[in-house]
Length: 620
Figure 1 (cartoon, rainbow, N blue to C red):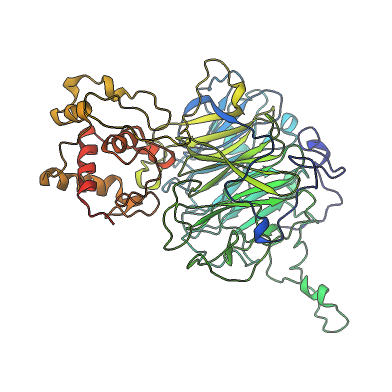
Figure 2: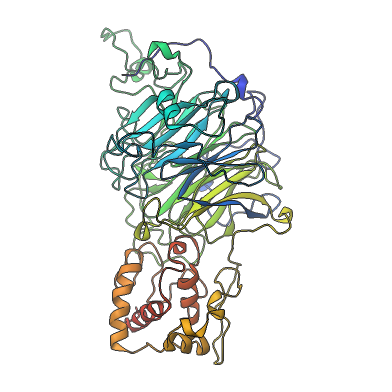
């Protein structure tokens, strides 16, 4: 049961003045000119190909690595400079200001329950999602986490814990049990689309991102239903007295506050506007609705504006902009719309009514509508919000990373309209972002693609990155690999080759592998660039089996593509993959985004046999 206890003021607004701008005169974003606004027409929604003011250039600098499927990064705003990295498994790790990762976790939800872990990690979208620190954390020690609960069959639970001042870097299992206060449980009917992000807003309230509950296409129709917490942005007041057993309060300024209150029926003398505010089954926690899977959102630390990265369906990803002046109650359209597009999409010219508020930006999947030719550039498959940059020539630029393509897009207002620019294409599978105490945007990546997921402890480790201006990369720092524009495949003219990484052209270790460790066929390919298994029926059969195990989940059994490229008609999304050498390099080294989990996993000879199988397929 949730109580709606009236309060007379918005707690915490003044507390955040140091990190989020207090309410003041309207501010301009990015460029000089009119204040940023929510698009009123589809034509005003930004698409890839835009140009941010000043053409800022960025790089991703490694801060620390070795994390098990990191899902979130945050700071406590307590002056310590610590960065807290959330791991899917159910642990939070501390990265000290100097980049050292503390061995002992800050929080461990895998060992405080006598029956085992409290976190459900059976599917790649489940686990510990995020952490948020109370605005008064430095004095009260409160922090909050959101995770999929194993005892509750994957339902999302939001729990408050309290740090012991005598042990600021670690909660013992006893301390974890003693201080746990469950605020909310969100029922999850399926194992995907859980949302996950929690964050304190500039008003001192806790905002919660909740997905539509899963499967695909919102079969529960949660997006437009106000009687469920699914497919919503929620807002609650966590500042309650512990002894009154109230988990949280409803801010009286929430758009549905009091809408479900019992009352006497009155049929006359009531205006239509008054009738419209009666929602007998609505949930007062709701701040906005009509979102699909808002896994990540970010407040601009300078203006207080809210940006939401909402993971799309099959063809488009969207970025929602909500100005700080919003009173809540926005409907973002799902499942009537996916971004600006009709749902379901049937072709490029679908016509449907606009439902709710349009996003500020959107970008396509590789196949932007059913039957479309695959795009070669500017596409992704799953948007992950990183944060809003107000440095390095960027003023209010919301940075997002794509889970499949490794691309980083920047969305910004140029004084007249929104611009969406592709800033980098990396080899990273982005999962989330955050801020350090100085306001720098952070990013984390995993190596945990659906069809190669080995579980929360079995995937290759992930990494924490900091977004820095490209001309401010510290000497000797390790930066994320990126693919240069116009990168081409190697010309193969015979003779010994130098195999290179498909992103930055650095030499691959394959070149220096001792001959004794390579089969005769692999040595032959290394020296000549010609695949000796082409046309070999036995090798092709083995390659088909290996392809089915490693690749068919994304590229389908006949290599016509689904999530990734169509491999049999030249519609490659990586420019190197038009020769056997380039194909080998991409599989061997991982290429961009979602190819990373395969890097180093497939034996060299198996790669060649898979390539022989692909070469045997009829071109379309």
